[in-house]
Amino acid sequence: MAKKGWDEFEIGAMLRTFDGKIDDIAGTRQEDRAYSQNSSYTASVADWRLIKPVFNKDYCIDCQFCWIYCPDVSIVSRDKKLIGVDMDHCKGCGICVEVCPTNPKSLLMFPEQADEETEIANWPKKDEGEA
Amino acid sequence: MAFQKMELKDIEVWDGNRAAAQALRQAQVDVVAAYPITPSTPIVEGYAQFTADGYVEGEFVMVESEHAAMSACIGAAAAGGRVATATSSQGLALMSETLYQASGMRLPIVLNLVNRALASPLNVNGDHSDMYMIRDSGWIQFDAYCPQEVYDLNLMAFKVSEDHDIRLPVIVNQDGFMTSHTAQGVRPLSDDEAYAFVGEYNPMNDMLDFEHPVTHGVQTEEDWHFEHKARQHNDLMTKAMPKILEVFADFEKQTGRKYNPVEKYDMDDADVCVVCMGSSVETAREVASEMRANGIKAGVVGLRVVRPIPFFEIADALKDVKAIAALDRSSPNGAAGMLFNEIAGALFNTNTKALLSGYVYGLGGRDLTKAHLVALYNELQANADAGKVTTQLQQFIGVRGPKLAFL
Image 1: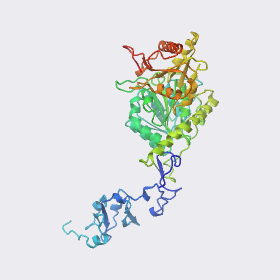
Image 2: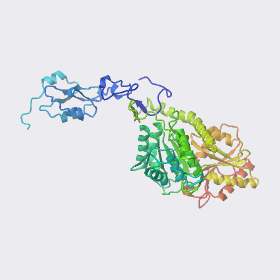
Image 3: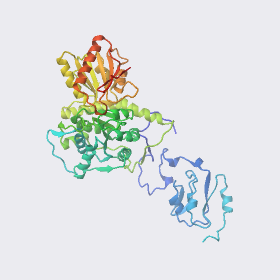
Image 4: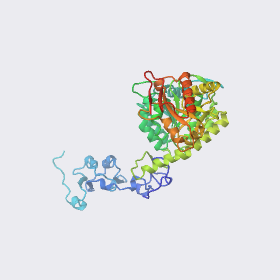
């Protein structure tokens, strides 16, 4: 972001989330919203993450638990179907994995450098001992 | 409108607290969040009563501390409401963190600060310790010497604070008990006149504007912080005073009551003068007139606007005086005193030959008597006659025990 002089910004410790006026924000998908450069949506914090969630859609029942519990709104859901994780904002907390009710889980945590396709290919089998 | 108007007489008998509460009612303040503290309690109590009785369409928010009180005021101001509160002393001390938040966030809030000593030892009476403590907090500060001025300055405070070029919170100071609890005749405006003077609240960057979402109270580090602070200081130094003068002039037009950043009394030909604040200004004026009857050309300078400091107006008022006394009603605790320093700073690069001495007085509600001021004027005249300060630069007035003098 360009470094402005003291007289070049709006007064107050205040930032605008969107460029210009917005309407029907609830009906507009994140990727279609005019987020300003000041919005955290446009800033990647991926480098905060040490471990990452990998999503295996084969086991997902679209219960939306992960979507509800994610503290960073990083579970991307469309028409109540989980389609992936926003890796620019996910900080690797693992809450989505913790709340996932399927057996095996549909989300698991792996080291940041792990290859997604390999991990999905080696996904754990159903735990028959679990009630 | 969903509230009743109040019939007021031409002259009402109000103390400073009642005058402030009535001004908050007439300004139709939307939110008062407060944690009542002596001697400011009747201000927020009054607003709460007016709200309960249907005279204000607003909200009184009870909170668990003064820190929470100012935090709630900040939230309400960021949301886009007209906001005010009141506190004193320890309450202000607990609020101090959030005072800096309010001014940095450029939120218009009017705080009635009923000046009271700071512990320890605990004391509920008037001195200016609390006013002095937060003088660098970025708030505009007015000082009232009597209930009429409390009322007037409250109405004017909203107009200055809420202006979109200013957007800085304003403190209206009054002396604890001496002003806050002393009933005097006050000439109020009618409800309609007062509201017309203050004007409709015009929100700016308010959080309830859902079409323009904003984040208030952001964090900045070494890359942005300095620019924000510079902007705030610039606006205090260049925009606040012209706006204050404009509002003072508007108020004079409407009421005939004239306010100045520096209030001069008998200063045109004064040889000696006292510079002070609060109710002491009125005592000093009375004594100055009596000194003139005795052949001493005495004057009084009262500071009306404490922040932004009227730097050049102070220099202009004092440059032709021979001897000046700066009266600080707060223990400088290891320094010369705020008024002493401000006056010295304002005069230093001028050609004045004025002699400046400082006095610490009135701590914890100790009276400043007329006898004290007579002795003080005589001492100033002796300085003027000798052409030098004949005492030490800092003395204590009215304290028991061996004489205290420093510097």
